[in-house]
Length: 98
Image 1 (cartoon, rainbow, N blue to C red):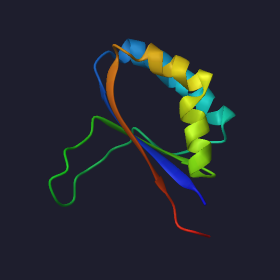
Image 2 (image 1 turned 60 degrees about the vertical axis):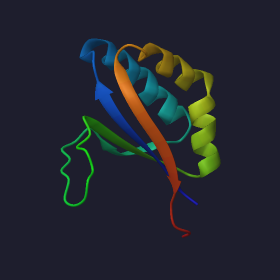
Image 3 (image 1 turned 90 degrees about the vertical axis):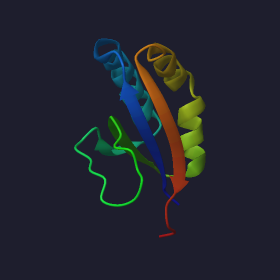
């Protein structure tokens, strides 16, 4: 079943973050991920959510595929590149059976 990676980023250095974005995009593509949302407008409609600086949602074929992507050498390089460029919260959630 599909799984969705959700990443919330507070970008502190937009120039350095561009390198992270390029590396992460290549790693996502290599592991079969498909962007559903990538930093578009967001708005809190209800509750105590804090409006994220940047929200990204990526669909993968399975939870296992997300973990392969996340722990891959390609993504670890991307992660290292953003060290001083953004604070991130990342989670994964399984989708519904099809």
